[in-house]
Image (tube, rainbow, N blue to C red):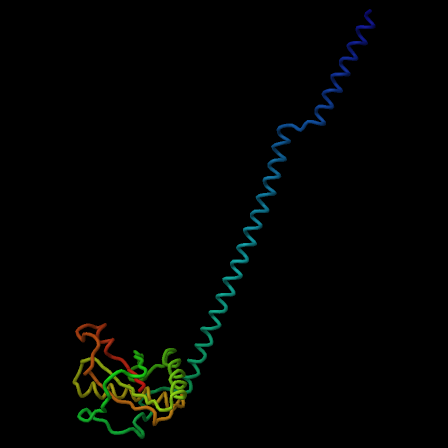
Length: 229
């Protein structure tokens, strides 16, 4: 009887040991589940971050392409302007802008027909002392004007120099005339528009478009007007 009970106890112990061993091999623990879930989440997170990085790189590349294109356009315009300035040397007192020009005085100014014009453009040139500084706007307009006159050979151009009222009216007339002749010299001598097509004259302080009592108003009145009729 004692031998039977001993054998039975050994059998039970062996059975429990087998069951415990099988359960630990087939059923993952909570820690294992958490570890697996963490690894899967990390993989997904890494994939998402990789996608964001790739999108960011694509956007950066697109912005770089747009920036390169705009820079190229600006560089071409700057090169054209630099070439024009180099050709012109300087529209300054060293150039005789009065050569072959008619005598126009304050008392005998050039008459401009009234009424609407075929085309007109207003510029606000910059100056270094009395030297005209070329800019992109004037360089571009010179090309447009040359083509316009080619398409309309019967048209003529009048350049008017306007000033503010600082100083005497006679001096302002002379200043406006000089500035208009500087523009004519550039259009004819450097851009190839026939001199016979262009007349340069002055209105001095006679036709303000703003009040001369303010700095901004005087700046608006100091202008060049190009009329095509």
